[in-house]
Length: 383
Image (tube, rainbow, N blue to C red; front, side, top):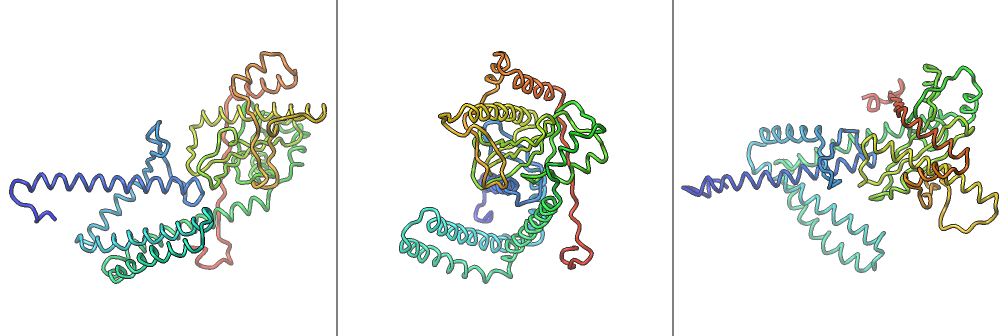
């Protein structure tokens, strides 16, 4: 390319070409960050640090580990392939493969979601998939000349994602098999040797029902629990965004005076997880809102049928499929109004206790489970 220009226009063209390469690479790097970020939200990729670089654009992210990996990979590929011809062979197969995958996915969308006429779908697939398959077969002969690079790279990524998913699934099945019943909390409430610490304790788990096995382990080593304990389970669901009023789903564990709750926090693949303080504020507001809605629900049951615009209580049932969002929410300002209005004394004391516990601090109880292959497992699993 550079030999096409000579004389005084060489250096201007050189600057323009380098600038174009930088712009094109920036688009690829940003796309890689976005794909990894969405894969993390769906639980399909090992956890890496995601930095949000813009307060205005939620999707503008930076992932340091991926950035350094791309830098090292670019240097290695440049030294290994040496010429732009070999790099172009690898690039060509990657581009045509992306076109083929995109058309295949669009065909499925036309069939499953749009529910178009089957003849229209067949016509679309015959024209576009047929031409792209011919195009793809024509570039496969360059496989040994550098085309193996994107396919090998894709295979490595698939192995990483499959391994992560398998280990994540095995850990979840272990927690599900060894979960503790709610009777354990009742025994703790009646145990005089268990102390209560000030503040709110957040214990993260994958379970949406039952007590995670890490909690009894924690009690055995530290025979104390915080004034308010919340078992938090963060779930990614296959939609783009979850409405703020439907994000936090609560259920209280008996006995109520022990103040133990279960909470499912739902995120879509385009939702951005807030900073710790903002998350804590939203969690507390949703918890207070849940208690107020529970109070309204009890009063409605006692007073008979009541006309309402939506559900007044949130319950985490046996599975995520049975979870439904709450109705009208109570804002932070409304919560303060409830406290100042001199409503139900028990309700007012509970809200004030939660706010006092929040002021005393929020403590994150993180339990780490190591996945180890069984001694009788195959060499593949041990590796």
